[in-house]
Image (cartoon, rainbow, N blue to C red; front, side, top):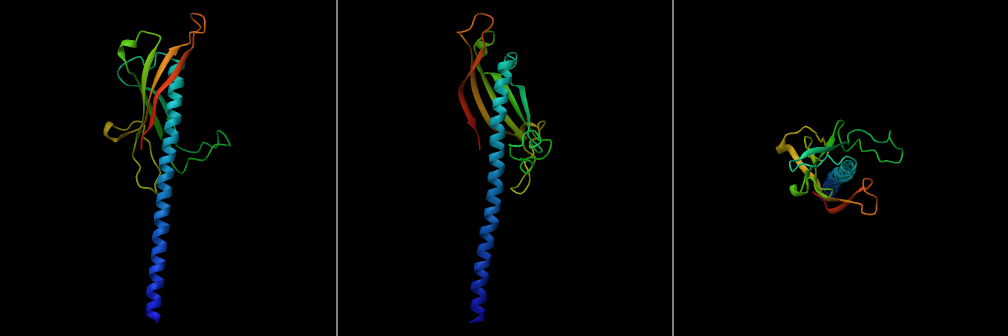
Length: 176
């Protein structure tokens, strides 16, 4: 009787520990993925605004670096309302955004179609460790996190020379 009780009790304890460990790993992995996707979305927004402000960016069919978004360390020092991402990204991490002209025929025109790619040079691993996005990682260690295609048109409602470039989102994809 005592032996049966010990066997049943230890089986229940082992099952509960298995569920707890699996749950903790799942939460850590989800947290990393969510943090990387939100940071990639922000990097795309920064890059789109950067090209809108400096139209010389993205005027080449070859990819060029058009934005770099530091994501390592705590951002609470900047704004009390932002979440602390220190536990997700290692200090010194950054996402790199490249942009290139989608259609080389539009290089000299006021209307441009530009493709943006956000990459993270992965060097961290495992659900319990922080993600390190190395901005100088080599090609095979680069992970495509997000990409977007944006068309910049000139605002026809403004006088010549004062026309703003208006970004129009053609596609916006966050990869897993």
